[in-house]
Image (cartoon, rainbow, N blue to C red; front, side):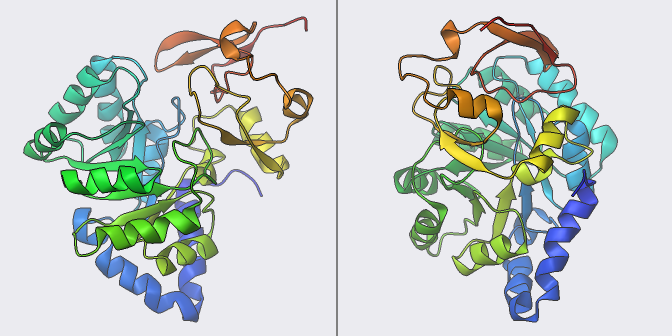
Length: 325
């Protein structure tokens, strides 16, 4: 397995599904009733807004051009002019619709204002509640709102607000997940909760191939959202060495060692690298805020110091700093 272009990734997942005659009817039903009916996307495949800046214009445009829904990742700080440039760069690479993800736990009001001014197709929200006021503002700008939820209670609030679709994320997902429920138990409950509401449910969490796609359909989802599957593609903005490790290593573990200060109470799945195995028993009182600087990276145009255990995904600008430990 090597780095694959996006078009190959999209079609690899889709062709595997339609090649299986037992799942063909389910897939055709998905195409008729899922994302295609809302925004005109060809496939029910969503590329997650990989952070902190891994889902850039090249990746998102490639996904859009291949028929999926690509999501940019907005900065975790206010930078509205940068957000506008990010959107404009993507539009130079595709004439298809796409979206952008915003983490509501960080400063975001000016960024969202810029997003709505640009009239992007989809505003994806997570780590916070979508208000009715924001939904109305987005709809007035012609923007669809799609929150990502990690619990039954979050889903209920999103449905009551009247969102356009819901991404249901199970704890199996990569990144810092907001919920603790497994996808297989949470997804059908949310599907039943949605009921007759015209709100498609998208499944997220450990879905990487056709089998996962079909399983999500069987549980009532209308599409899937994948993140890790796109990390090692040519268009991903992740560091080449990071991509290579994703390909070489296959064992993972659920842990809270990384990002405890920035993402409190949010464990996530990581590769079992030698570094992690050496530090997996890190005392509970320790976190990245009191650790040495191990590198620097330019993230969304701003140079950032990277501390040990921060868990920041490296991009091509990332450089290491020697640390005695």
